Image 1 (cartoon, rainbow, N blue to C red):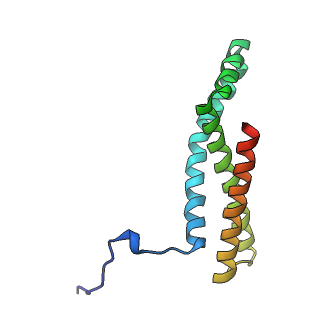
Image 2: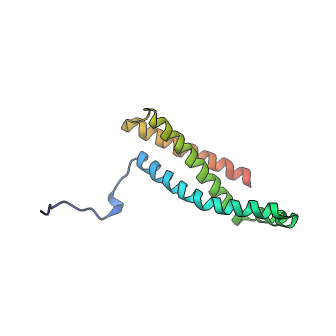
Image 3: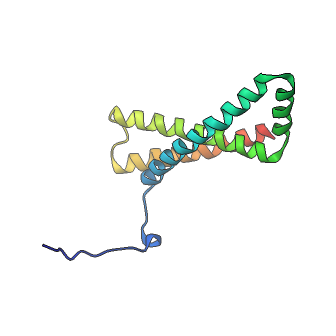
Length: 124
């Protein structure tokens, strides 16, 4: 039995609501943090290995490329924490309606952007 259903393969025509965007970003930030753990463990290991290793990592931190990597790691961590707290509130029964869910998603995204800018200014 084959049902005839309309198929929309043009992804540019699909408009997602803010809660969906927040959920997708939460998953992406989790994946980024998995890779960030490796980078951060390598820097910690190198910096604790010797005085030369510490100086090497300190030299990397003076470069713009490594600052972007650190900013990306901190940005992903910030968003993941903020969205995680939002999900905890949703588990408690808050922000489950469409309007309040979208509002809380927008708030999380705005807070994340503000905190990321503050961290970026602090790094430089």
